[in-house]
Amino acid sequence: MLTFTISKFRFVCVALAALFVGSAPCAFAQDVSVVSKEVQNLGRGPDNLKTVETLAKTPQLSTKLLIGELHAIRASRILNGEEKPDAEHVLWCLRALRYVTGGKDFCAKTSHKFGSSEEERNRKYWIFFRHKTCASFFAMWPSRSSEYIAPEDAQTSIISKWKDWFAKEGAEFDYKPMQNPKPEDWLW
Image 1 (cartoon, rainbow, N blue to C red):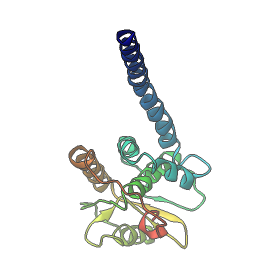
Image 2: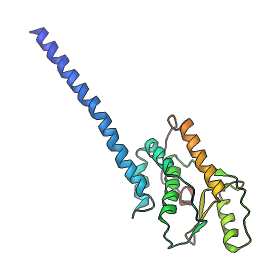
Image 3: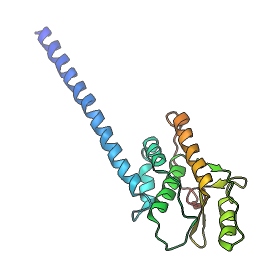
Image 4: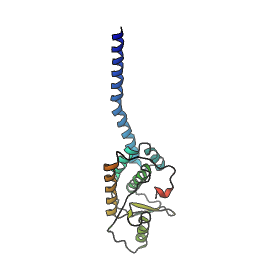
């Protein structure tokens, strides 16, 4: 009788282990699918702030997917009210990266020669505002809700820095999403 009970116990343990191990990849695949949809909707949905907060619940996975969405943008400026969904998507991916990594940000040098027009002067001022000696991927003029975007060489360099950082440190990074951040710490 004791042998039967031990065998039955082993069978139940093995069956439960198989059930949990077998369902784990499905649960992970489900998480990836849900997070991937959230990432793809950034900058295109009605509540980007809520989406970023949701992504912060799975920071490592979200960071990987967000970095995969980054690419250079042709626009140099987005005025308040303008609709440039692809550009806004990339900018919101960068905002989300800043948020889920606790404020991590990269900047880069540019060989772009800024013109003397008011637009070019404002662009240069705002994209160098945060880091001073190198260009941010984008910056917002808060009172006008105008977004200025770095020249393509700086964008490409910043994207490479995000990819290199994640490849080297992403798995071991201590993700601590921002808590009640000021807008200038991640939105601008």
